[in-house]
Amino acid sequence: MNEILWYTSRATGIVSIVLLTYVVVAGVLIAGRRKPHAASPTITMALHRWIALGMVVFLLVHITTAIAETFVNINWISFIVPFTSGYSPFWVGRGTLAFDLLVVVVATSYLRHRIPERNWKLVHWLAYAFWPMAIIHGFALGTSQEWVLRLITLACGVVGLLAIAWRLNARHHDRERRDVILEQEWS
Image 1 (cartoon, rainbow, N blue to C red):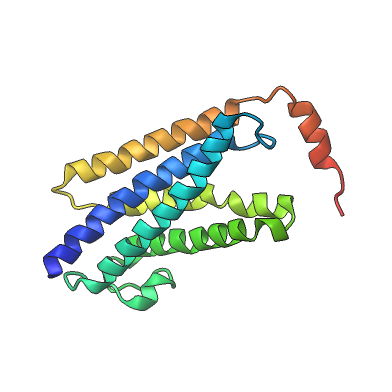
Image 2: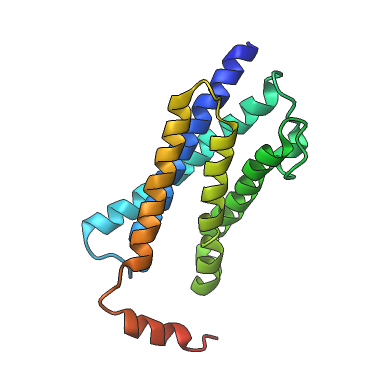
């Protein structure tokens, strides 16, 4: 049974990082757009949300199986409080911290209609912090004999960084107008 939990934890960890990378890349691609009028951005945003939800499910299974299996010592408090694990506290703690930030982003996304857009956007930018933490967590704790797992994690890092670099260099046709609007005082 313990071996099944071990493999399930690894598999759901890899699926989680792949899905998280997709969510980050999709978010980067749709960031800064106004409400979409065409079908393509609408589909992209729907996929962004639904795959994010699926990623959270896989992540919860990853966390649960990592705690439940007894090969390494990860306790339930490590699920929420970073750097408290009996096993590799620094690297597990990075994963915990990434999860904590993810919870904040998901919670504010569900409350988006109740909070100002500017505040939601500031919180949502935490994705740029928790995604690399998750990549580092996965790469550092990946089984060294399983080079495929590390390669997948590395590929996710490269794809995500390329998308972020594109976003930082991309200019919208109405960028000047957006900057003027952002500088205005909102009540």
